[in-house]
Image 1 (spheres, rainbow, N blue to C red):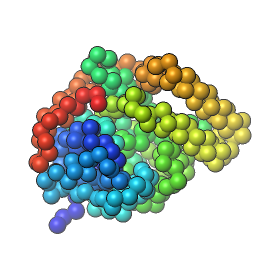
Image 2 (cartoon, rainbow, N blue to C red; image 1 turned 180 degrees about the vertical axis):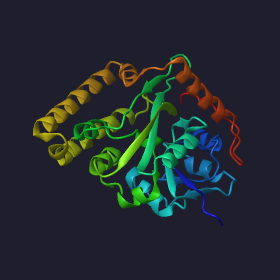
Image 3 (cartoon, rainbow, N blue to C red; image 1 turned 90 degrees about the vertical axis):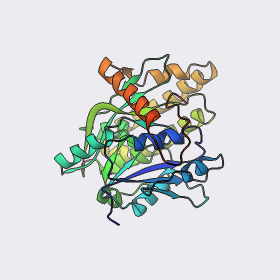
Length: 302
């Protein structure tokens, strides 16, 4: 059997309410030379059954019944992948149907790039206009420390790069930032300045705030680990203090019901053309047919 050009990985745990949309989003892609790895991380809510219901030879379900967390699963993906390129996405997101075509074309045009990503859109529901999060490849070590290189879930990388730089499995909320800090100055990243990836924040989920707090704690570990080299001691101290301040703001916002307001500050209002990209992603996902998967699809905010 000929190996596909691209391996797409969707790690998931207890995401039965959104996983089907993520799978449909893969089947809606204009690029079709792929295999899809659905990697279960110990789900107990029916997510695994949804994954196993797909009837397509390009789809493989990987499950061992254990909870190992995202970095370990991403390292596992690299060992399982048959494609020369590896794409990832989160189980609660969707993507524009041209995302993979565009990213692979950029990698082909820039053979010195290790990975490429895109802008992201934040979709909070039909009643709210989408927001766009711009992320530019940093030119300084301080930029790599504070923002990373590309939005992690949008990344398509060369498998050789990912094999050379495995994730730190102790950092389940900051594995991407650590990767970008470790590789700054060693490899080159690229970004497509369009929101070809749609994040649907679940700000009312019980795990939202604890996960955010854990991210801040792990970011501080990274600041002390990489900051002196990338940003100097003063820059490191500033980053640490800023992290504590953001934690405090989110705690207060959670108590008074204003977390959605903070999420809206993560991006700017989408332009008309960017809003069309979000609409196209939603519509293409809802219309995609996946053999064996229930036809019930929303592709709207979960």
